[in-house]
Image (cartoon, rainbow, N blue to C red; front, side, top):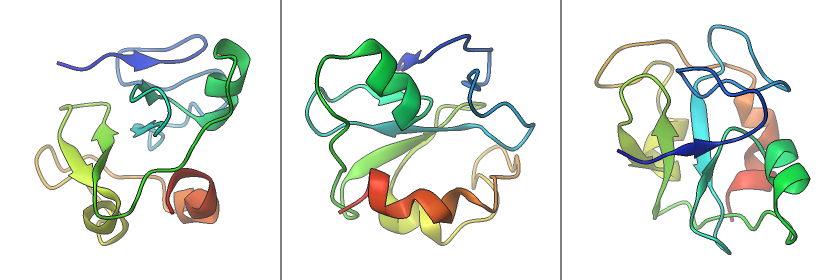
Length: 100
């Protein structure tokens, strides 16, 4: 199981920046290949900037069941295909930060 990194992380990967019940997605940084609760946590912890992943590569993880999926698969979902937990519908606003 992959670790989700961030500030004040709970069991579902929610952090101090994003902590609603639907904030369960962790995104992988292309530079360090680690999953972070959000880019703000990445910037606070790491010395390099968050680098977005290609949409076609595995780069998103559900914080509830740890299903990993591509960005293309993730953006087509409103809920996790495995555990069915709802994703935050506003996450698409940050697409340019996490995907290239």
